[in-house]
Image 1 (cartoon, rainbow, N blue to C red):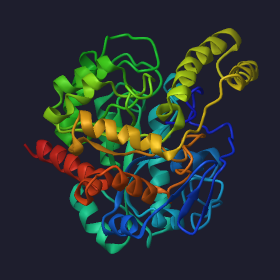
Image 2: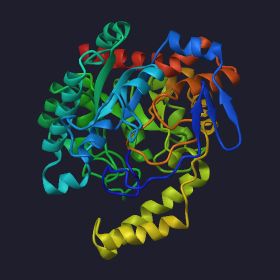
Image 3: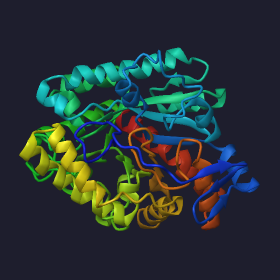
Image 4: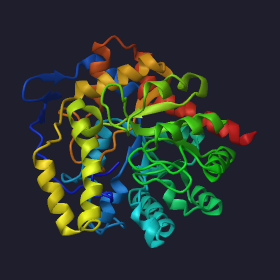
Amino acid sequence: MRSPFLSCCSVSFAFPLCLSVWCGQVVGDESVIEVSERAQKIHQSGYVWDGHNDLPWAARERNDIRFDKIDLWKEPKLHTDIPRLRSGNVKAQFWSVYVPAKTRRAGTAFQTTLEQIECVHTMVAKYPDVFEIALSASDVKRIVPTGKIASLIGVEGGHSIEDSLSKLKELYARGARYMTLTHGDTLDWADSATDDSKSDGLAAFGEEVVREMNRMGMLVDLSHVSPATMSDALDITSAPIIFSHSSARSIADHPRNVPDAILERLEENGGLVMINFYSGFVVPESARNLRDSVVAKRGFDKEFGEDSNAAKNAMLKWRATRPNVPGDVTMVVDHIDHVAKTAGIDHVGLGGDFDGIDVLPKGLEDVSKYPVLTELLLRRGYSEADIHKIMSGNMLRVLEAAEAVAKK
């Protein structure tokens, strides 16, 4: 995701999280969630496959896409580093190669996306004992037992292909294995959830994009798109779709979240929703404020100029009276629970959005905290088998299914 009231990917505001971690406990303002020995055992017996991490863009914002300054053995200013990935038992990760939608207007979207893909390859090459590029489900199954983190690439926004199927194919050739059809801006061929409609879903070219992705075995990601686009894509696709980092709209009413009518179609399609951890998509009050902030931000950009200092200052004043309430980790489990009950246990996963967001629920401050989710799922009566489906099994099944469609 990124700071959602900005047009770029940056995390521009720092919000203190009143939380500390000590001896396996998550200590919040009002409660302590201790990860039990049983939960730790279950969590470590499988692995986490997360659908969306924005570390590559965080590196770019620090002018370090070659990882010369960032030390992934210890990066306290980021949500992600190697020790915390290992603590969270993250063994497969989709790294987002997001670029801002405004790069489309500048004519640099495709080239900047290629640079972000190279950023991922550079990171993997710099830490070869930790990461390995994965291009298929079989790669993931081979890499995970070695102790390395299977590193997959996801393109966040169809603006990256600049209305070209050949550029879509080039991104796949460079290693991208999903593409989010839009980001925050509506395209000529696909409507965004947070912009005006042009096509009432997908235009004819958008339909061809979906078909071409099916042919290649590239996952169609419906995070960020409008419900009409979600519905059109489900009508057209021959392969399961994913929402790489979205949550449930009936719990937190933000247009970025997935309505129940779409969740109810996932059993037939076979796809899944990977739950986003961003407080603005998880906490009902924050979702309302964030939804309104998108409208306000567009108004300030129109009045003062896009991303001008005046527009940013006006937005800061607006936000000061409408805080993004962090909430806590139990609210994320509410979203998991709702998707599991509405779509089915085979259709929910995790897409944390780490290093692309600025406010996280208490208890989920960084990539080390996934065991807390296992603990809370156990408390809600989920079986060990179902927990492993949520953590990684469902994502593995979906990628294998998409590859099987491509082989046909």
